[in-house]
Length: 255
Ligand SMILES: NC(=O)c1ccc[n+]([C@@H]2O[C@H](COP(=O)([O-])OP(=O)(O)OC[C@H]3O[C@@H](n4cnc5c(N)ncnc54)[C@H](O)[C@@H]3O)[C@@H](O)[C@H]2O)c1
Image 1: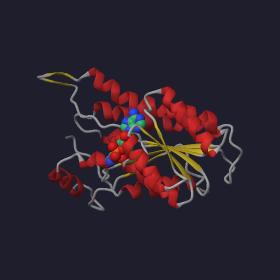
Image 2 (image 1 turned 135 degrees about the vertical axis):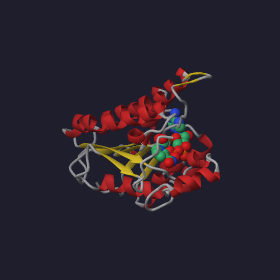
Image 3 (image 1 turned 120 degrees about the vertical axis):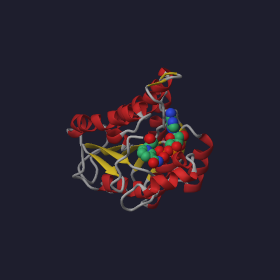
Image 4 (image 1 turned 90 degrees about the vertical axis):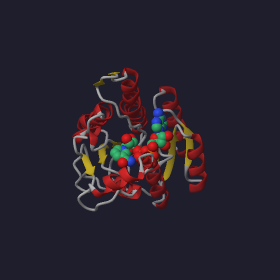
């Protein structure tokens, strides 16, 4: 699908990987709608990107806010062609330690954002995308989710995060099958280690160690390298129902 002139709703688009997608989509002539909790970053980014970009404050754990973001996108740009779900939160807790069991509220919160919220964006956007006229590839759009290599090699302390991200991998094929008859493709990217604000919260020494652990290239990924893959997934009509690791061949150690 040609990206020029298309409208893309990007959840979590105010920062990191989602921001890189919004920036690349602007360069390719698309209209990114940044749907993010972070109002300050989202507004600043949208005004930086110019009049083809828009921001709407959205907490993807609120179905009303997700619907509002979809309605806003339709009102502003008339149709939604692309959904890129980048909204997500990290978590690190072991199932139980001497101090106590895993906080259940934390587990539910991670699921609420990384899994249920992402599903809600997809279901409400897909319903509108079904109404699209056929595009240049004879379809109605593309949905891309952001999982993580933790879905495959989750470390100790990542049960909640890994489970939420593995669920996105698990639903990729059935969703692609659900929407195949209507010409909507569904894909998932499982990133390795990328230099985003989420990563910047780690100590410098640890970030260096993580970068050196990547076989080749031994570095943290540049968020625009993630956006490059998003572009390819949108443009290549044969890609569907698949999860692609983007990780420089790293396989995470147990801890
Ligand atoms: N950076 C990495 O190395 C890496 C690796 C694997 C997977 N990921 C995944 O990629 C995605 C993007 O991560 P990032 O590194 O760019 O992080 P980031 O923290 O820079 O960006 C995440 C964005 O999501 C938004 N967000 C969080 N909760 C939200 C909610 N409830 N509703 C709407 N927006 C919400 C935040 O405000 C933020 O702007 C996440 O899903 C993350 O799990 C990142």
